[in-house]
Amino acid sequence: MYVSMKGMLERANEGKYAVMAINCFNLETAKAVIQAAQELRAPIIIDLLQDHLKEHLGSHLLTKPIIQMANEVSVEVAINLDHGQDIGFVKRCLQDGFSSVMMDASAYPIDQNIEITRNMVEFAQTYNASVEAEIGNIGAASTIMTNDSMYTDPELAIDFIKKTGVDALAISYGSSHGNYPEGFVPQFRFDIVERIKQETNIPLVLHGGSGCGEENIRKSVELGINKINVGSDFMKAQVDSIKYQLDRDPTINYVDLIHSTIEAGKEVVKYYINISESSGKSL
Image 1 (tube, rainbow, N blue to C red):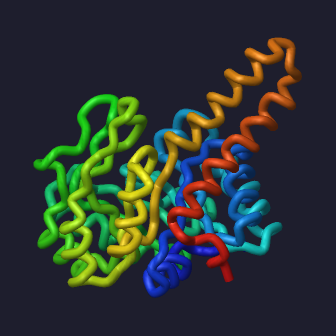
Image 2: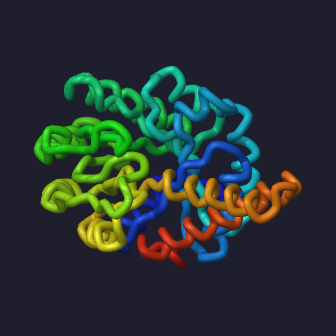
């Protein structure tokens, strides 16, 4: 069933678990995520990145088919715009049927971030949609990984939450987007999570969950992370599947090749659902 993130994250907050948000960009990736969630009876979030939507298929082409997929299963499914930085584009996604959006104004000075986010929270209420925002700067493993200067300031985050009424907040405390060097596991500043959670008790979000390590993720969930974004590991599993299938049979039918990526993606989603402790948590 198609829902907003708001209710599922509120229940995750109360139940001390996290809902997985998986980056998708087409119908096949969305199908893999929804099927994995259905098999494990877990609530799930389809994250559609603004850059992917602009570069590939637009939100108006993807939203309705994914909503149809969601309504054909019995678990809760939300569509969330990931890292929406273009205000007009974020509003268009809400008009196209997104049940949740991330208004990422973290590149602006804090006062502007507050104003932009508060206005989007008010706009989203018209569509009964939830809004996620970000404080701090989550780096990229391929360029600049998150460092001390990029961590979320807990006091700024607490003030931001009070002034915007945002439904969920992404915070920077050690993770980075993308694939880490082989064998590397980031160190997390869990004190940042603890401080913000203690003062606000709203759903907090971990971006760049791929490759963070099971121990870091479990500890994050224990301390109050209620949404975990994963994209790179999900996509890598599908790329690896393509390489394997082509190596085994260079003449493989394209349909069979794509189907193999769905199965490979499902296994990664199931892994993360289990360590986020959301298995069996859907209504």
